[in-house]
Length: 167
Image 1 (tube, rainbow, N blue to C red):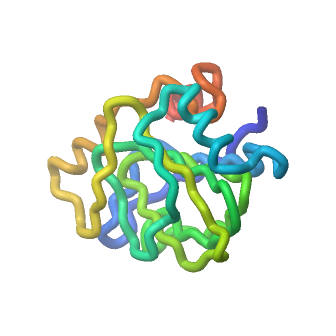
Image 2: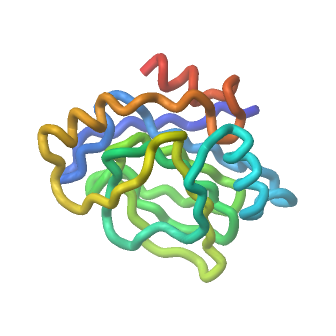
Image 3: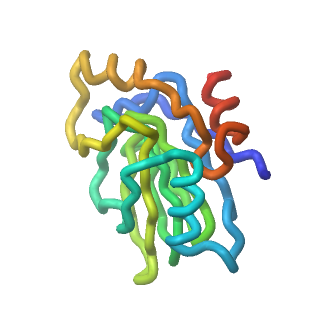
């Protein structure tokens, strides 16, 4: 089990990002042989993450107030802008996985035709799509949203639970 890359973001224009928690990027979380949508779905479900879906990433900047989000890259590749308008461009490909804490801006800047994402959320959390500045109460919700009990890839003993508790 490799340690993920950790990236913290300050607020970026109208995107709040999370005040404490880092974005986690697991490079080649699944091998090329096993990186497909069903494999990500099995991993996420086994770790108790819910609301699983298959799609892509929207081409407009957005964030979520009520949920942390996992994005497993099940096919193709993309350039994703993470952290709002002033964030970083990440090149991701099949087998990579991102965990975005609530408030983290994300946007697809361009992707291959085969780009496919499997997404999901911790139990009891659901995504809402925000495209404007967060209110004071929304910022409080983001900051106080419960931490997931498990890492979406590795369960209770995965890096997320340790890294986010230390943040």
